[in-house]
Length: 458
Ligand SMILES: Nc1ncnc2c1ncn2[C@@H]1O[C@H](COP(=O)(O)OP(=O)(O)OP(=O)(O)O)[C@@H](O)[C@H]1O
Image (cartoon, rainbow, N blue to C red):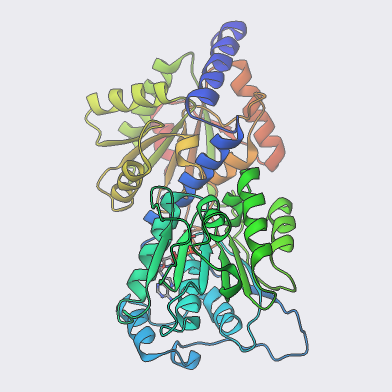
């Protein structure tokens, strides 16, 4: 092991670089960027439904009214043109969240709804269907208003509206996003408007392009990303205040921390609430080990020894910094591995392509920094290497990230292997904190002993 003072200094230096270079939680706009990028990545990656086995929790505003849920799209009595659009998208039956949310959203009189479920569970498709159902195509003015936190997220939702409304061409869509300049007082003919809070607010107030009094459905998407900037929160509330009392208010979020909840209560009066819990991850089915090394070169040798001794279908390797990740990917490539690298300077599109290729098995090793891969699930990975242990900005163990990197949900409970590389007293300390937190012993592995490595794969 390296001498402490030296190793600690390197750790600290690496960590501070990691904080600034990979744009972590240091400022508000970075936080929004980070959250919005994560959200967009998830959207691009989830090309089909994410199934969860958890039950939906429903809290009705009026507990005496019967609770409807549907198992088919026919039961919703949608217009033929819409049903055709839904089937054309390859949807056979409503997703778990849609079973409950759709009847509520399509009820008469309209009901307000706050819905929370993880990315990929069908929220967007649900509110898009609700908006398309509510529109009266003979009226040539804005009737449904949907706001999203960023330009890119608004475009993604717009695509779903266009796709689902493919057989309903009378319904038109307008984008209230930067760059889409309209003259003051120009009257919008499109019935659905999707946009970002700032531009939507301008169109409703200063420019008077939308008459907010004629809006009958208001959707606030990605509320958890939205509240990451104070400005967006205020703008959303200002838009909401201009809408008529009877306007249906719908709010969606992938997570539900207190701050989201407080915001949701301000913008959605008398809500029904639907929650789909995320499945809990556990370390129960994971074999965890640590390896002692003196520096990154030795960590690399240990990694090669592991690869030489056991067959690894796919592995994810986590590093603190872009620089270490880049170096490691290059070294592994020299050794003949087919490696994918997720790096901080890549665009969201580039990252989505890399993750998609890895999911398809085109690359067997994915080297990444934590910031890059936060919130992304690649469940089929059987081996996770913590080339650097996850730590927070104060240099303490980041237990939540550790669990997210290597934990499994019930559904993906197949056995996994996690190897932690330790090269200083500081990293050993982090490992001990992790052991203590999860109350699980992490055993030492001697990577110079091939027989011993072979045993861990059995
Ligand atoms: N009922 C359904 N049957 C089959 N696929 C569906 C259904 N509903 C949605 N999908 C598909 O599942 C994926 C995720 O759906 P959707 O985008 O609506 O989820 P989401 O919860 O809004 O997630 P995100 O916020 O990341 O977009 C999409 O590819 C969508 O086309």
